[in-house]
Length: 112
Length: 119
Image 1: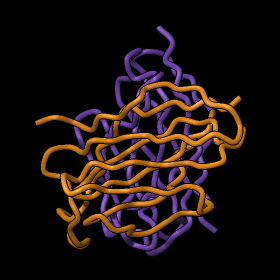
Image 2: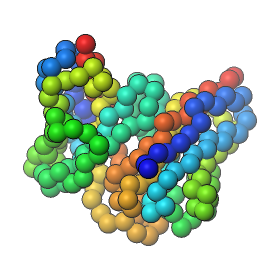
Image 3: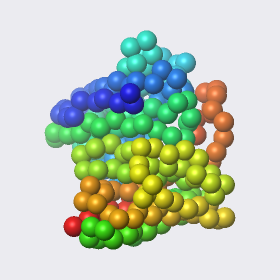
Image 4: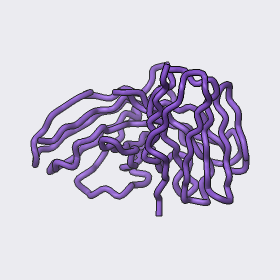
């Protein structure tokens, strides 16, 4: 199937780290992505990782990929109230990088 | 460099009507994809257009159709609207390159969407 699964909700306190998890299905996915969606807005690409990498760090963001378990995670260090949003992981469909299968999204709520 | 712009931002239709949504791609991008995002769900791939031809389609019926114009802008048309078509419709543009290598990710730039309500 083409289901990409995420937990629905995560609540953290400002300054803590957030970890959002995702399980994908297509082992041929070339790239895996994390997008952010704020209320009433479209999707903003945060970061992506190539499938032959285990980890990618980009400022406060760290992506971990476990290809054997088809598990992807996004860690946000020093979470801020401005990070409150819905986070989507996505896999490239059938290896084609332009067509994405998105998860259901994780709502991150950051408490001051 | 302009981003992806979509119009209209909001619209209300009734069942059975037809709707056309428009999208202008980001400068330098030649590929346009359309996604449907129902409330509380992740975006679902509808189809993609490259060089004015449909280049892949998701699990959507034929009453969802599209066009791409020589300037790479695109339209999404939905006929015989149903209540379940109520959603945010997102357009994304990209430049079509092959995959492969750590620099080969072909990222999508999304517009803010058109929110369609079907009554």
